[in-house]
Amino acid sequence: MICCLLFCLIGCNTGPKESPSAPINGLSPYPLIEWWELVYFHVAKQRIKPPVASRIYAYLGIAIYQSAVHGMEGYISLEGQVNGLKNLPQPDDNLEYDWPTVIHSTLYLVVDELLSRSVHADENSFLVMRDKHLENRRSVISTEVFERSTNFGTRLSESLVEWIKEDQFDDTRFNTFYKLPSRIKHPERWEPTDINVEACEPYWSTLRPFVLQEEGACHTPPAINFSDDKESPFAEMVEEILEYDKNLTEEERDIALHWADDPGETATPPGHWTYIMNYAIKQSHLDMEQASAMYALTGIGIADAFIASWYSKYRVNLVRPKTFIRENYSDKKGWEPLVETPPFPEYTSAHAAVSQCAADILEGFLGADYTLTDSTHFQIGLDPRLITSFDAAAKEAGYSRLYGGIHYRFSIEAGFEQGSCVSARVLERIQLKNDDNQPYFGQ
Amino acid sequence: MYKLFYFLVLFVWYLSPNLGAAQVVMQSYLRIDHSGALPESINFPDKGLEYQFTYQDHPSAVKCSYTLNLSSDGKEINTFDVRLRNLDFTFYLEIRMQGPETALKTLSAIFDKSNKWLRVKFAAPPGCSAEDEQWDRVNNISDFQELLLQVITQLDRNVQLTCYQKSG
Image (cartoon, rainbow over all chains, first blue to last red; front, side):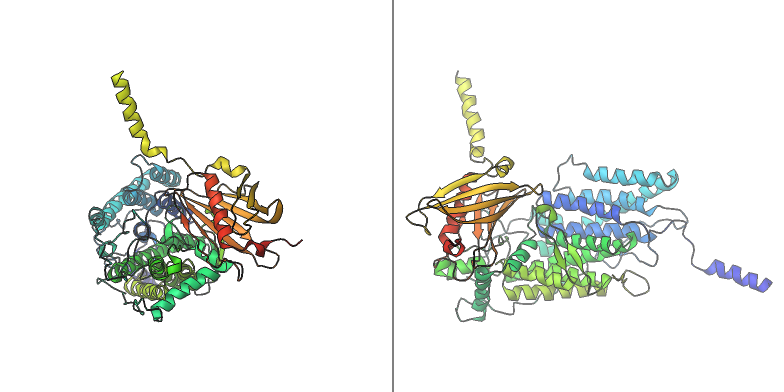
């Protein structure tokens, strides 16, 4: 009997220590979704460019994860897994924290930093959002825990902001001069398709990626070489665009407009995918813990897919279909595609890369046959579209650029490959749980 | 007096860049009917083409619906459903084209409010497009009536409207 008691006491003392803080599993993800929706609003309203938007979403996802991770049983920090992320403040294991309070305190400063260049100085919606959620928490926890949690959130956000500031984004704001390579004797080279338009983010690939390691990671040269010979494989690709342009079906037209994701009217392609992620979180009734894991990994993948695609864009520097068609078809001097040609080079299709990467990662969480209704653009008057799987949605997003007349097929397919390469690197490099298995939430 | 003149010159100089910046699409335009005519129609060279946009409904803050009636020399060609989306930076006008023997296809007109250009695109059913089809971008659209006129002008130039003519 005494032996049994002794065994029990020893066993109790050597087992995992019980945390005085309540974990976040089982909590509603809706407060987090509200933060996302606030960020979408500002990204659209301020006409933030897609690569810049992807950076914002990635840091938002990481900030949520890092402020929640100590309340997520079995999950581990991203420190040492994401480039440059280390030495973040640690909570005291012996003290009680309220993790939602930590999350809202952290997000306020991080979001403020991410959007400070875009919003007016007197913009207070982030503050209002933080205060609303903190007031809700204050009513259910002690003053001592509340203050400890807000202090920890503030310290964490300061460290995160310090890390964010080292990603060379500021350098790309100051170093905006970009001399377009001359097109004399180089008809394959890209030029903007409209007057008074500057090349969009020519130095984006110099940003610190999140998990990619080497410059030019996941880049492959075009499978088809440029040629203005009417019999060449390249000409076939151009002919395909004109064929779609002439015979576009209603379905293809709907797809082209659904995935156009124009800056200004929408939260851009990375925003579209994080909208889809939030629909899935609501539909599958995921909790705050599961949502936090999904936000971090998907945001990282999307941002790195942008960096990879942007490397290809400005290295290959391939002419857009609009320029090529106008220069090579005497009866199409004024040809216009259905979707507005964006001001950056053609190869690879970033929308295809980002969509494939996001789809691969979301599949890892929710499965290959996940179906949902995508109502992202309902507010701008577009009908919802049924998604039969994440992969099918990614393919639809990629080929929407062919239907819209702004990408060649081989660039879209290279984008899919690039996206899959990035997602594989993300899943290989980042371990969210300490049992070696990535979480799978099922449908 | 000299000072007053000086300030007047400064005031006009200050305003001049904004003089041509009047809004092309106003909410108030999207609740009323609009009509116009192409006296030199390509489809109906001797008779001209008249159009009438009739307001129907405002199903959401950004969406509204109209019908478009096309006629020539007082004789109706057809009536089509029209959907408008008035967004912050872009205005979309979509005409749902369906004839007695053609499947439904939508003509898209996209107007960039900041740069004031209009682009019209339509993949007409086989046999219904003009031989020298060319959907141009029109720059410097100055008012809403011009915007509608340009949409109809491009439709008339690029589509064989007989494909949509009601029988009888």
